[in-house]
Image 1: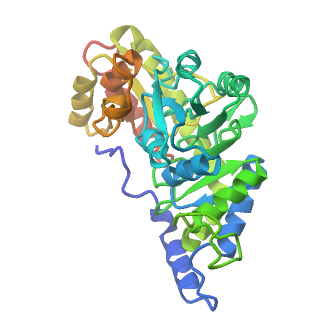
Image 2: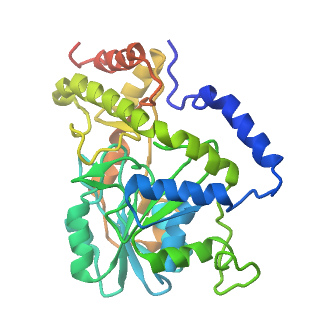
Image 3: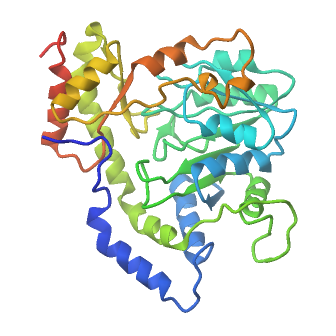
Amino acid sequence: MMLPFFPPDLFDDERDQLLEIVHDIGTGADQRFILGERTAAFEAALRAEVGAAEVVACSSGTSALSLVLRAMGVGAGDEVVVPAFGCAPLASSVISVGATPVFADVHPWTMTVEPYEVEEAITPRTAALMPAHMFSVMADMPALRELATRHGVWLVEDSAVAQGGVLEGVPAGCWGDAGVFSFVQVKTFGTVGEGGAVVTDDVDLARAVRMLRNHGQPPGRRFEHRVVGTNSRFDEILAEVQLRRLPGLQARLERRAAIADYYTDRFERLVKRGVQPPPPGRDGRCFYVYSLLVDQRDDLRRHLADRGVGSHVYYPRPLPAQEAFAPYTRPGRHWPHAELACARTLALPIYPHLTDAEVEAVADAVCSFPGGPR
């Protein structure tokens, strides 16, 4: 048995469609390859899907964060509170606009940022809070929404991994003043390349993002540059790909959730033996990655590899411990829960085309880890 963590066949069933799309757009009379009718249609489809007033497609989830911060006027002298555990863009996007990331520790089980840690990090210079959903769990957005409102700062919701998640009836991406999605291959709505989107109910904010993504030009006003923008435009081929894949998204999400339910049911018996599954349930869940917390993480990873099961370690170091971001940390600060998460997380395969037999085999391999119940 060989079950890779990153499947090489994500789009095998869609190969003929992909070739057809490339041919149709490549030979089209208008020769429009970016920001055309398909991109507009894709944005409209996502607006309907999440119930947001505006969706602005751009080149990646990372650029979506930077665009949002710039559109909000966040810049030099400002601070943005971000999780100490997570993906590099949480910090780099803040630095890219000239602001300073302030790192807050995370919850020891969910690995999402702790609201009380966020509040302690807020200062008069704080311009925004930027929580991130993590693996299969959405952040505590009701508490963070209340915090942002009470302190009068922006709330940017990094929903790059959480598209399709719903918390208390509100879709991921719609809790903040703006949210972002990522369409990189392995995300819940991944595509055959890079891509992202900004989601917001703030029409003025969306208008600013649209200009910034296209060299500061308003829509339809080529060579009229009102602000200093960048190139973060969306590809027409990818827009058509995502339009065709969108109707199947809910079924893929349900399959991911069903796999996670099965894993959690199997692994709850392992808690006393140092293997902790994520919190059970469906509310506030996204199932992008199914990540265990394991006391003997590296031993379990070798154990799984010996049985042909791929796994992956996300974020082996907290963001403030990374060389690129260490200069922005406050002296004497520690993030113990983030550090513990880095030492214990181990992600298992959860892609939707896993068969029941393959899912059972993964669970069997974990449960056969020495010291755990069989």
